[in-house]
Image (tube, rainbow, N blue to C red):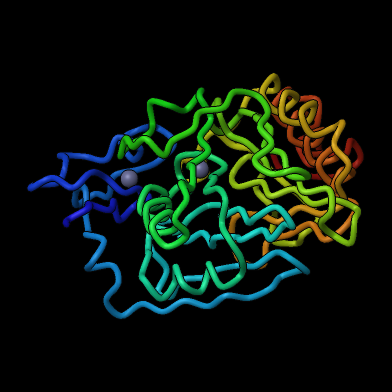
Length: 290
Ligand SMILES: [Zn+2]
Ligand SMILES: [Zn+2]
């Protein structure tokens, strides 16, 4: 097998003799092709020299971190529920040992990603988990982002605005970054106050007290006011207190709805020129030369 893995976004591509000329996900204006050109690896080459850790970041939520990181470098999350587990943002790296470690947390009943940039080797994950568990593990993919599937497979299950993979866990399409960008709502998380897993739908700032919204993070393309308001409106009815971002350590630990609201107002203020830096106007009573 030589499944081709794009080294920039981590998306796996079908087992063909030669890799595609370019990764369509990276040729899009939200991603990037390196100056020296498209780079590929294979699933087996990625395994060489890499290790992983599995860490419980709050009760029933586990972070899987691969070192050295691959492509975008997100961590995967495994959400444990009484009705089976969800593998969220599957890594591009996959090995037999890692699959065993994930399965040791309990039976995985679905693989899901917030959007195409963080889907990694979703099909390989589905196949390996299905073979070991002897039941089909679907890949939950929003129908709006269907054209970004790079390795078509019968395991894909397309959903539209809302999907409940197991009782008590809901995927909601918020759009914005991709039309199908979604969040995972887990009301039992954060001690029953509720958790959102957000991928790139919201980017958690380094302080843990802000979020941002972008069409492209690497190319710094903003979202419109309409799309930011659409995301906020999707989250508004949800009961949650905490947000876990796509990258290790990025979280809004508590009072996350207030952070989302205030961050959105700030963002829209800059977009619409209703917030201005006060230093644009010099004080009238100061002396200055020209
Ligand atoms: Zn790519
Ligand atoms: Zn993204």
